[in-house]
Each structure stands twice: as C-alpha cells, then as structure tokens.
Image 1 (spheres, one colour):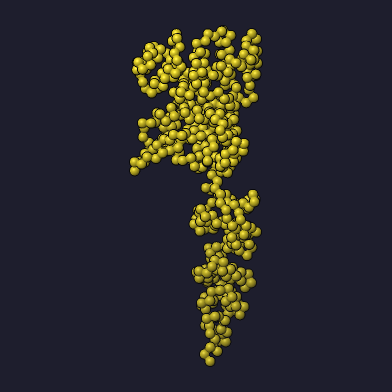
Image 2 (image 1 turned 120 degrees about the horizontal axis):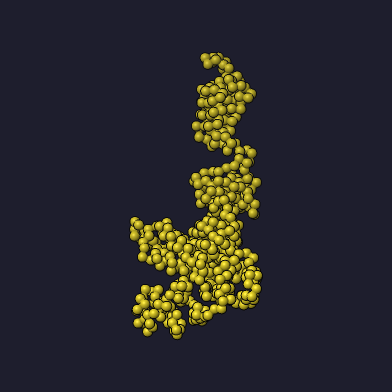
Length: 514
C-alpha cells in the first residue's frame, strides 16, 4: 500500500473508474496519483473480491477501517487466532453452535490465548474485514430469502423481432449464500410458485422457512406483525412442510441478504449477458445457469471456500427432504349442488357428482391440473379426476339417489349383450327400443323391464314375444308383457282364427267404423 494513505473518496473513485474500463494510466492522469499507487489500491480491492457496487455502498469509515486493518501489525497470538476464523465461520452456521462454544474449543488448545471478550472482539473485526457489507448470521437450513430483481432481461421473438421483457427471480440460502436465479415471464402467482419450486429442487431440499419480500404473489396484505399470506402460496408451503415468513415492512435488514445477492447478480449475470441475444426463455436460462455455476464456485473474499463448497459441507445436510411429488397449483371456485346431484366447473364446462344429501348447498371447489375436490364448511364431500370434456358428466354411482343409479350402472352395450343371450329376436327388439332416441333413463327402464320377463316366462317365450311385438310395430314393455300373459307367443304364425287383437294405441277397433 502507498506510504501515505490518500483520501477515501479518491480511493472509491479509483475503483469506480477501473471497473468502468478506464486504464490505470488514465486514472492516474485524472486523479493526479501515480500509476503505482493506483495499481496498489486496485490490487487491494481485487484481493478482497469486492464488487464495484459493494465499494460504492461502503461508508468512508468502513473503507478506512478496512485499510487500517490491512496495514495494522499483528501479534503472533493474534495471527494464531485468526487461523481458526475460517473454520469458526463455517461452524457458527450449524444449529446450536455459539461463539462461547467456539471460544471454549480454542481456549482448550491455547490456554495462554485470548479470553472470551477479546476473542469475540477480534472475531467481529475479522468479519468486518472479510464481509464489510453483510454481517448477519444465519443458521444452516433455516431460511431461503426470495425476491425479484428490479431490472429485467430481454429476449427477441424469433418470428416477429419483438422485444419481450422477462422478470428475474433470485433466491439465496441464508447460511451458505448458495444462490439460484431464473428468468420467467412475470411475477404472477403461477410463475412465482414455479420458480420457488424449481429452486427447492435445485437445492435438493427444503429450508425451515421461506422469506419472500412483500410480493403480491406471496403476501395479500402486508403487516409488521401478522402479514396475510396468499392462500395458494400458503398451500404450496404446506405441501413442502415449511413456513412462510414475509419480511417486515420498513425493516431493510430483514431482506439485506437477498438485496445484496441481487446487486451481485447484476454484476455477474446481467453484465455478461448485456451484449448477447436470446430468442427463448429456455435459452436465456441456460446461459444464466452457466454464469450462476461460476458465481457459486467463486470463493468468498478473505476465505478459501465458495458458496457451493459451504453449501455441500454445511447446509445441504440441514435441509429437510423433498416430497415425492411436485406441487400442483390449486385454484378455487364456488358452486351450488344442482338437483341432479352435480356441480358445474365453469373453467372446463364439466359436471361432477356430489352426494344427493347436499343438493342445494353452496360448496367450494378446489381443483388442480389432475384433481377436483368439493368442500362444504371444511368437509370434503367429493374428489374426482379432472375431466376437460365440455358439457360432460363425471358421476359416482354412490352419489345418486337409488332410483337414478341405474343410469350410471347400465349402458346400451350391456343391454344389447344381455338380450343376445336370450335370442336374436329379443336382441333386435332391444336395439329398436334404444334406437327410438328416447331419454336414456326411459329407454333403459323399458329394456330392463323386458329383459326381466325372462325370469318369469323363460328365454324361449320372451324371444318369441319380442318377435311377435316386432310384427305389431310396438316397442315397449307393456306390449311384450301382454303377449306373454295372453299366450300369443305360443300361437302359430298362420293361425288367425279367434285371434284377439292386442290393445295398441295405433289400432282403432271395429267401433271406429260404425
């Protein structure tokens, strides 16, 4: 470092010009400082891996303290203690580990070392030197901080050349600062949940709490004490067995870690992509993932480990396991149980059955891409596989009144097959009844009545009765039953003497002509 330290404002100016691409010679000329001095300050910032944004946001006092600590002569005892700090920095993130416990481990090995108060002081000073911006500590596996960047990325529609802006989702684990980034179409609920879920599967586990900023997709009503979490996002958290802890309004420190991550992402993701052209969300996310790998593999300044190594060594084992299946977004609707024991889902224009005891009730529908559930006062009344057939019916037989169940239990094919076992004439007769295109309930009742006559009169007689009724052109249960009762099915085809004419609405009778 230069023998005489220059003004801190000039030091910040040096690094700002350097990161803007200005040469060291040009910086020297603009600020009136020798090139060697400029080079030494630039090397100092590089050694601590400070970004341009971090240097800009540091106060003059913090910057001065950083240089002062770098120049301060250290005693052998302090040098020995500082060798432990990177190890302590990992251990302090583990559940139950405190500074007191770490000091006891250190003091057991070095009885002539620093006492607890001095230990804490030098450890805090080391943390300031290595992390001048972010000083909060988070336990491993505890929280995942979530936000969207203020700036957006852009893709170009391949066919039209239209520019389309994309939102950029960022989340960071509190302890390891292992980061996930994804570009998506919007900040709407479905995109937000999908990105959050992709992050959990990227990490391979679930933290104990999700900490979103007060995004509309996550929080419907912000509050310092009891914010109201979006119903769907709360259900998502329940699926993954984690909690939602929105950041408090007007409390910047609650979200400092993710805001700092966003600033770094601007430098390490946005800047490298600024001159590239992408035509799809998938393409830009592939490029983001490559840059994200580099970011997570980059060592922290002042430490010999990276976000990834810290995550693998400390935090990954503290995460809760993922569920077997991914979450399906739930949507909600209101409906009334109709008199036919069905409710109507307007999104699909489809009907689903509910037990007839609930006819007339107002119910709540909860549906996903695969399931439809019906609730009344928190009681689940029915669950169905989702069916998108327009104006179709999904019916469970147990939901229908007993006198309606046959509609769902029987079909035309079953009646035709049943009649075929009796005889050709009977099968033809049943097909004729079905072809009359009556209401299904009426047709099925007629078929059922005709076929049940075989129990009383036998299959042979019923088949003959159906043949005789076909000759009369009468297709109903009453005609077949009358033929069997009168014994007309036993008469020869040519016998017409003393034959009593069957009663039928199409037969006028002798009195008609008098």
